Image (tube, rainbow, N blue to C red; front, side, top):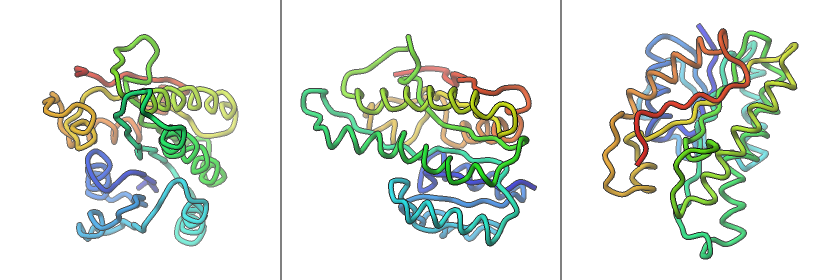
Length: 226
């Protein structure tokens, strides 16, 4: 059984991931600003506590948990994301920075903290968006969000190259339309062809097996986009 860290677990795909990993008996550290949805599930082998990826004290707490409770980390899934849907000219510098703090800077800091606990067989899986893929369809109002997801893709590629000799594998899944609360916030009323549960099942399989076949790759997982 693997030791799995998942961020963004209070709703949507993240919450589904916690449940399906736990069902198979894996040890899960579920991280979210709001731990209540996970705590209410009362799942064996699942630990959760309030976690803000932009706060160093919270990231340090992750390191403490790994050191005290686990011998290492097999999979890190960076699923947390902050969405801002706002016209570019109305988006302030602080709002842009807040999106990047969650979607890029915080991810980098968490990876930096977890890396010493991962071996060459481990897997860092970053969850991006089709909006961050070069040449894909782009949508007004998502300048901060989609550009940050593009930065996450490039960061993944760079880390895969830097650690290819003795570190874990790094891959990124660029998701298309999935029926989640975040999709509703970005595209009110749009009905996606895939549910959060369906996408979580795919991500789970890739998190456990994908690094055997890929490193430094961005894989579009998109049946449709709005």
